[in-house]
Image (spheres, rainbow over the protein chains, first blue to last red):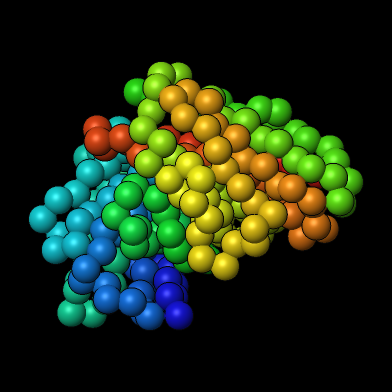
Length: 119
Length: 108
């Protein structure tokens, strides 16, 4: 059974930094692209970052480019998102997402973790 | 940049009825990269349909997807109480972009 479990969220002041982690199990982690998708309170879904299977390709959505860094540790089956220069508009539930089919779809989702940026 | 527009914003129906949800792309897109998701309150989204018309693992056959070019449809043939949720369409392009529609709320 695929499991994706996020950790590391919480409340932080504007301008601060936070690191999210996602522990993956139930599939061969090192074989698949992984993503982060976020959802602001009461709003829709927004893709923000992706990383390929070996970590050599990363892409970010424009609003987080230069502030957020996605990475992975295939030995530990862990995906991470390092977030810096956080803004109020970064407040959202962050989902760790597995793309297993390789067709740009989000096949499995973690339960999500809330990040609140507020003074 | 592709924009996906879903309609209606809210759809009010009763169990047993048929639901038809629309997703329109701002320009023609590849059907192979069009997906639909269901999200219930307090839960993560769940993949329902990929490649515009293929059901994901474990998805009941009352859910079906269709369409091509700029117009795509998610149909729920006979609504069950557990189907009342928010539905999102999503596409993937090579830019890379992964735009979502704004969602359709299906309510009783």
